[in-house]
Amino acid sequence: MTRYDDLFDATSPGDSVFADKGALDQLAEPDEMVACDAQEQQLARLLNGLHEGYLPTSVLIHGPPGTG
Image (cartoon, rainbow, N blue to C red):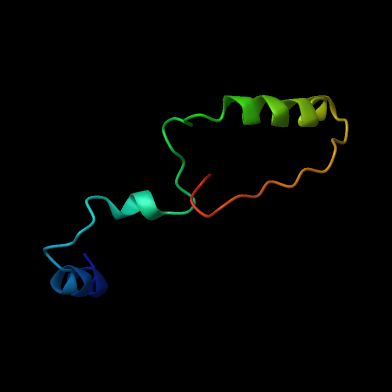
């Protein structure tokens, strides 16, 4: 361990309200996407042909924070 590992271990709270802080990582991928089948189908139709080298339609994906 490095000096900083020891420092972080010594200062970390023992009674955190988080069971898994990794779940808050913005880049973490969920094990399963829930209730997005219709949106996945629509996006696949828009991007169809991309894997064959065709340029797809521009797509803008937006939504409230935390919705995926």
